[in-house]
Every structure is written in structure tokens, then in C-alpha cells.
Amino acid sequence: MLVHLGLPSSPIGAVAVTVGSFDGVHLGHADVIRRTVAAAATAGARPALITFEPHPRCVLDPANCPQSITTLQEKLALVESCGIEHAIVLRFDRELAALSPDEFVERLSAVMDVKRWVIGFDFAFGRERRGSAEWLRAHGHTVDVVPPFQVEGVDLHSRDVRRLITGGEVHEANRLLGREYAMAGPVEAGDRVGRRLGFPTANIGIEPNKLVPALGAYAGRARAPEGEFIAALSVGYRPTFGGTQLRVEAFLLDFEGDLYQQRLELRFVRYLHPDIRFPSPDDLVRQLKKDVEDTRRIVLR
Image 1 (cartoon, rainbow, N blue to C red):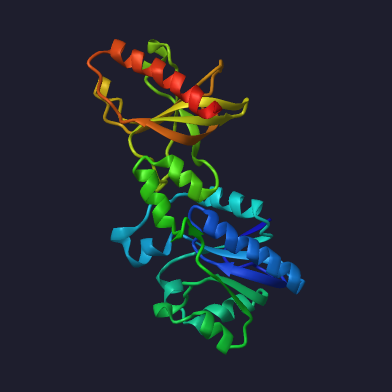
Image 2 (spheres, rainbow, N blue to C red; image 1 turned 90 degrees about the vertical axis):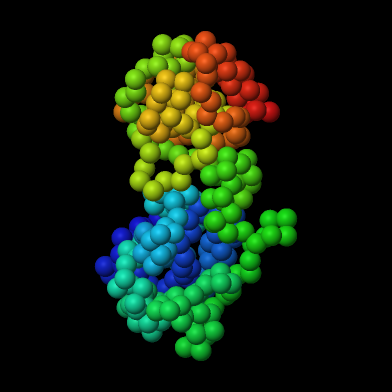
């Protein structure tokens, strides 16, 4: 997949294109992308996807800027796995928001020959959201409108996934994503409290604006350079030790080695319990042992 930061610097030829934020690349997004790939094959074109960074709401309504289910890097990897050949990342700012539908389409037409648009049922673009499927058709474009993707009779939206993750219901969020929710980052130096307790953990750096699950313990997995491991995950402040810094950390089961400064991907399978302040370190250790047992049982079943 070719990634274009901004409009392509030279024409990319005939495409079937879809446009949107695609935050989370959930099952509904995957459906739109699959249809785009199929439309491109029918039209003798290449499948292309246009997305925005940052999320448009962060510019148009900063007070309600959503945290990102997927970072840009994660989003691009996911859309590539769905078959997109050209990913175009447009910086969303006031200037882009002010373009009329005519101006937006004119800019695209200068660098691609859009054979077919594949868009969601609520798609709108251009200043004051004046552009729509009807507008595109009235201006001679071929448009496929994808109906709402439903899970158990309910339309799926990225906000539903965010709500579930921030509420700790990661197993339900995973159903809507079609995969396990993940966070990734470099392993940072910690205060080695876990090692002193017999449970050495790896703390990962949290990427800016990345959605963090509810505070608590989770059963999960970790992908390290050495392979994939079952992992007891924790999101919290280490209240037993008076911590004040939010940490996302993992105890990798059946792992020995040093992960410092290596990139680690953590995947959340199921919420176990809240972030608890224990009366003593011994009480914490007893809970950690139980968390490890529960994690192994949940992940392996």
C-alpha cells in the first residue's frame, strides 16, 4: 500500500475511493472498505482511501475531540490488511473544512481519476457538509452508498466502541472491532515495584490522544520481538504505593528477558477488576497471583 501524506504528488490513475475518519476500523468500516476493493476490481481501478488527521471534530468542536481508538499508524496497517492500495492522509484544518464540495472534488480530480465513490449512508463533505451522495450524482459521479452496518439490530458507530472501552467492557468492544483492542508503545523504565513483588512488569509509553481503557486489571496478550505471550495487564496509578502517574503495564506469563526500550503491543481480552488500593503489599501479591491464574484461564479458553 502506498501512503500519501497529503494529496499525491503525481497522478495515481483510476481509483474507486472511500472517504472518512475510519477511527477504530471497526466492522462497519471494514465493510465499507471491502466494498471499495470490490468496486475497484469491477471498475478496473485501484482501491483508495482518504482519511483525516486529526479527527475533524478536534478542529470543528475541540471541546468534544474524541480520543483515538486507533493511532494513525494502527489505522493504516488495518486498512492495508483490508486491501487498500492507496491511503491518502489529509491534514484536517480550517482551510480544508472551508472548501466547497466543488473545490474538494476538484483537488482530488487533479491527482486521481475517480471511477466510483463508495461512501457511508451518512457521508457528507465540504463546507457546511453540503456535499453528499446526491450532490456527487448530480455532478456526474458514480456513487455506491453503503447501508448502516448493524450488530444485533443496532447501527455501529465509533462512539459505541469508545464508550465500551472507557467503561472497561473490552470484550464487547472487541466484538464490534472484529479483533482485540490494542495499545502499543516502547517499554519505559519503571520503579521496579513489580519486580520486587515477584511480578516484573513492562510499562509502555502511551501515545498522545490514544484511548485508554478504564482503570483496572485485564486478561490479555502481549506481542514482543520474542513472540506472543499471555499477559496480565494493568491500567492505573498503583494506588497501593501512592502512585500519581497513569501507567499501562503488562506481566508476561512464561517470559524471561529484558524488554526495556523494545516496542510492545498489548491486547485487551477481558476486564478483571478495578484499580484497587490494597491494605498491604502482601494483599496485592495475593491478588496478582489470582489475576495471573484468571488471565491464563480466560485467554486459553
